[in-house]
Length: 301
Image 1: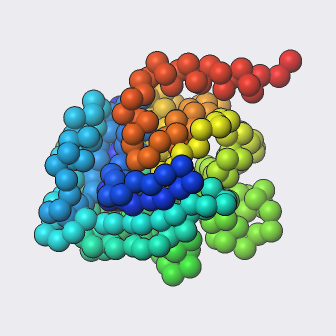
Image 2: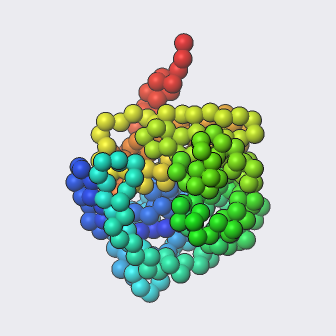
C-alpha cells in the first residue's frame, strides 16, 4: 500500500534555547514523508526552487520508501521560514515567511501516483488541497491538515473541503478557532458535524485527542527531556499516524489509536534534534523499542 502526501518542502532557519539551525531542510511534507517512510512507501508531491540544495533533495530521494518523482522544480526560490522558540516551546514565533514558488504551487499529481489508496493533504490552502482530491482515483482514506491562517481567511473553502475528506488533523487552538467552541471536547464533536468521520486534535507536549462517532479518547505525548527543536513535530506525528494506517491497511478506532501512539513516539524523536537530523540516525528498531516503553507507560493494572 502506498501513501500520497502533498505539501510544502522548505528551507528553515530556527533558533531555540538549545541553539540554532540556518538554512535547514524543512517543510510539512518533508517531515511527514520521512516519518511515514518507516512504515510504508510514500509518494511525495511538492515544489522547490532552483536554489534548493542538491544535498537536501538527496536526503529525501535516497531515503528508502520515499518517491520524489512528484517534486516539481520551478524557476525562483524555495519556500523559506524563519522562526524562534522561547518560553512556550509549543508555539513558534514566526520572524519571516517567504512563500516564493510555494505561493503559486499548482499540484500536478503524476499519473502513477493517482491510484494511491491513502492520501494526506498536508498544510496548504483549501483550494490546493481540493485540486489534489480532483486528481486522485477513489482513495480508501483521505486525511487533511490545516492551520489558523486558512481558518481565518479561507473558512468557506475549508468548510467545503471538510465535506470531502475522511479525517482532519489540527492543533488545539485551531480546533477551538474553527468551531468557536469553549472546550476541546465540544470542538472535536463539532468538527465531526462538519463532515470528517475522524478528528485528531494535537496538543503538543500534552498529547492528542481522537474523536469519532464511536467515541473519544486521549493519549499523552511520549515524555522526552531532550527537547531541542519542536519544528515539524506535528507533521512528524501525522506522518507516523498515516504511515502506520497505510501499513496496517485497516481503518477502525483501535487501529487509529495505535497509529496515534506511533505518531507520538516518532514526534518525540523528531524534537530531539534540528531539521531531520534525528530521523536520519533512527531505525525502525529504535522506534519499536521506544514504542514498547510507551506502551508500558500506558498500561493500567
